[in-house]
Image (spheres, rainbow over the protein chains, first blue to last red):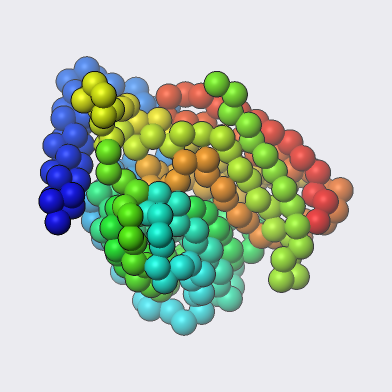
Length: 157
Length: 105
């Protein structure tokens, strides 16, 4: 338990101080201008709802059985957790992956332009958490989730 | 440091799967150097674009939750052998790279 407490503590303090330093040095603004298309607000968000709003302007998503998440039930190494998302929904415009318990829940978001409704990646997980997938299809958001148990976290220092 | 971008294509469930592997630390900015106690600055890929025959097929935006040496997979039923693929990515420090390949699934 001490390990987890230390990890949480470190994450909180380090994240705070890094942001403060970056802001005071005026570093945040130029980075954001450079990466104009990169949705900074969504990736900086600390909750899935805020991240979704940053990405799509709304956090309203309906549960869908047409989304398949292929990921381990239990991951031994939280630093590298494979995940593959596929969906039979038509006209998929985007797929986003969130890890609920991560300091920054949004892992990745893909905008698809003619590619099939499929995306796979490897993600970091600090601890056991629900993983939520949101698929944008036909202008609406659809969602599915799965819990992944993590033996050794992959986000701490 | 060299940042290799590797592209591989294969046929998977009736579609062409495009796998992209980039050699990149994907540093979160939340970790501390154990020896010095200083925070390790964030360094991660923010955006990766796949073009098929010159047209964007997918754009992946990534955050610090993506693992070191990201391996991304995409699928397309349209892509066929001989088609040209171009991958370009850019990280939060302004580093960027481009790689090209031909679909050979």
